[in-house]
Amino acid sequence: MRRAWPLILALCGGCAALRALLPEQRPYGVPAGALRVPGREARAVGVAFDDFASWLATDTAGARAHAEDGGVSPDELKLLQAEWACYERPDFYDTWTSLDDGGTHYIVQISPRPEVCFGKGEELYGGGASYEIDANSFRILKRELSE
Image (tube, rainbow, N blue to C red):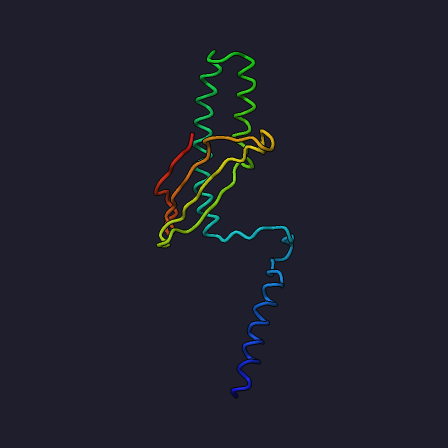
């Protein structure tokens, strides 16, 4: 029996290595490039992103109303309208999520991607948001919006 332990350990290690090399089983019709997002994380990100998109729409509408009331020149208005349209695009943002150390809430960070609208190498200060979402009820516990 003592001689079997190295063989058993080698088999277990080999199985783990083989499992790491084999792709994860996907449901029928799901392409190889698809990302798997666990349901709880997807829900936490969805709650945060929906709230952020709502805030962004309200903020942009207020800025549009001010600008269209003569707050800026017509040329500046055209530039601002293109910028606002970009800010409202979902692909302008990346989201990052993690479960806090205690497992009681998700931390969701929404960050802008300036290269989407303004080209590579461009920097953007501000924008995005940070949320804390309850891990059980999926209510927003804390929101920090960057302007």
